[in-house]
Amino acid sequence: MDYTKSTKSQIVVTCPHCSTELEQTPGAGRVRRYCSAEAGRTYRRRMRALGFPV
Ligand SMILES: [Zn+2]
Image 1 (cartoon, helix red, strand yellow):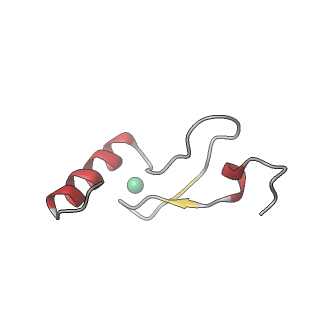
Image 2: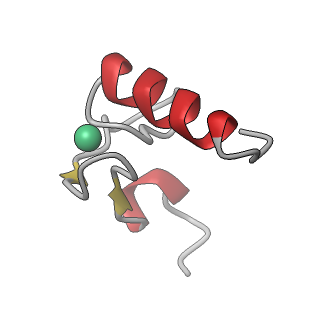
């Protein structure tokens, strides 16, 4: 891990909804975790239905 660079540029995030590798937007901001807002909503709804505290 190179701490002189942004952590975001060094991690590969895969969408838990459809397993797509997500490109992170460089610079400040949150890490992208889902390919789309809709995928995030669907994923969290399904996990909650299964009893996970997402
Ligand atoms: Zn997705």
